[in-house]
Length: 248
Image 1: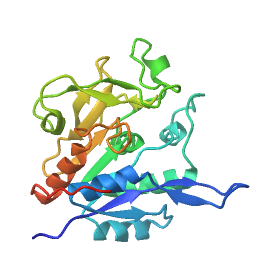
Image 2 (image 1 turned 180 degrees about the horizontal axis):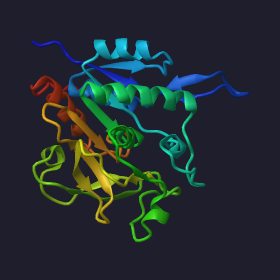
Image 3 (image 1 turned 60 degrees about the vertical axis):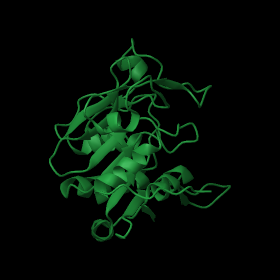
């Protein structure tokens, strides 16, 4: 049997506060999703040295870029919108270097939430900074009073998302106020919300296994179908359907 692929996962970061020291953390759904799909998750701390990041990537078979707080638009030449809540700079410094090298070497990658947005930025795309303002006719994509908020998903034919969901009505969790505006040339749309907002992308570069979802297949609000996205990612790397096991 072929060795299971090693899949890196970047972590969120929180600086030191009165109640606790600085810490890195990641939701269990990310590493459980990878493990259940047949990969071995490897947690990546927010390193500062670019050479160390390159060395890490040399050891891995793929990377999952996780969600979290907002990417700082000032790093891409835009003003800071009042609704934007930037992630900690230590995490964003690391994430941007990580994404740069992933994209340069066309390494297998799955971006979720802010991770998908970062892939698009890294490849030359742009973002809407606040959907309610930029797209006033859009449906709600975030409800602060309902963490289980969901909306419909329209998948594009011939995409990974179609393999995951097939036909029929689909609804996915939704907890974002930023979204892809201009899609980078390296990607194509794999799914949209009914209002046209891009909800999933995949690579159109030959040989590059790269996909992203604006919704969160790792979250407790995800459906059993949503979690199959991790399986498709592992299949893309190995070329084999993994022997799926349950994680307690």
